[in-house]
Image (cartoon, rainbow over all chains, first blue to last red):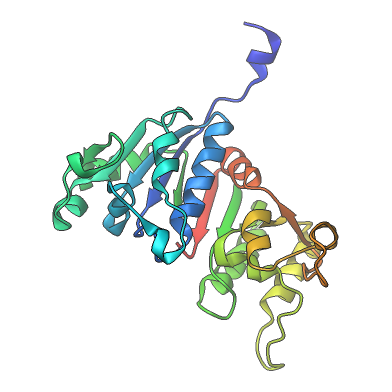
Amino acid sequence: MTDTEHKKPKPKKLLFLNRRAPYGCSLPREALDAVLMASAFGQQVTLVFLDDGVFQLKKKQDPADIEMKNLSKTFAALEMYGVNEIYVEQASMQKRGLTLAQLLIPAQFIATQELSLMLEQQDQVLSF
Amino acid sequence: MIFSLTVYGAPFSNQCSDTAYQFASSLLKQGHSLHRVFFYHDGVYNGSVLATPPQDERNIQASWSQLAQQYDLDLVVCVAAGLRRGMLDETEADRYEQPAHNLASGFTLSGLGQMVEAAMVSDRMITFGA
């Protein structure tokens, strides 16, 4: 191990909790910017979508008519940034009649109880 | 313990900025350290020196600036979120040829990296207004 590697701090486990629908509010866009930054800093990033936040991952978004930028392209780029830990809360999906096949990127279901456990295991939870 | 705070809410619109300020104030009084307050989303308005509340109301920006001076705090307004919403310091006003700047003393404009760095070095990162 070189000296530089030795001094490099251990990446932190940062969980981004997204609870809002993609366009009525700019927090989802701003959350995504923060996720990309955390990934650029080499942190261990997890994304969780909860409540109306699950709509952020829905396929076939077209916000052009309301003059908003489409978030889908950035979500599609997450894999390239090494962000692969992506979860959707199962109950939130079911309540909204969404299935994993309707999502634009691969995501895993997480049950509410498992989510509590996951939140406990993080260094920080960033809520959006 | 090392704390950092992120603030999303505009002052006077909801309780979020007041709660963040009171939380910051309390933790400092109790001897904890405050690594950074990062103002994001509508929270950027906390740094506007032009906010002019009636005299019998608290002035949230002035309270932050005073706290920053007292404890040598790092109050960071996100530059991307700030520019969009008209929060400029003198440098940015010059750069974009804007007629005025409004960032209060004690605040600085900086990037999202400051938010991530705060998450990396703090024991607790608390979000206000999510």
